[in-house]
Length: 264
Image (cartoon, rainbow, N blue to C red; front, side):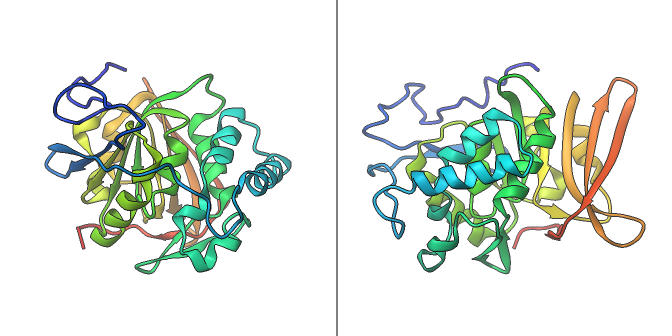
């Protein structure tokens, strides 16, 4: 895949990367393709509600994921690094590392750790090293984007709900992830400005995979999304784009929020 100099990892307007100890760059990409950066002087994230260090609890979660069949070492490492309890309400922090989905407001949920790891592993499908550019449909609270930032060179994450988009910005700001670009827009349209993508992953399921996603997927790339099957139930679908066309694989049943269009 060709590099896209129009989307530098650090978008502070000067072309000079600020010192991590002083500023926290998070790029915000608007639906029209323009970008701006947000910097804030803030200390590194501090674990709250789980003692001074949640590392031991995360390690237990990672061990459980491995026991459940997640084999990709890069994903397990990423899941161990991202503090999931910082993406949920403080009252739910004690449940953050359980294998359960949790409400994040706006009638949305943060997916179970096992589902996040499983979908990213399907996206990578045994890849060695980091993937290239990834498009995430449905930013939600920002947790999966943070995990993806450790397994891909760049992450473009689009959210249609303005309130969640703002929440994700706030949640991700302390993590200093200059390769994560947050977009407020209609996820069904994808984000052609960043295409082609090595992978596309969706946190919402529709009757069909939008054609825009297939068009924006690079040859050799993979798309992972919940999709309604002919029987009327949601299942994980993996689509591999080849030079001859698309290979489609239907996997286990899942339950995700419905895919919707527009910005709300």
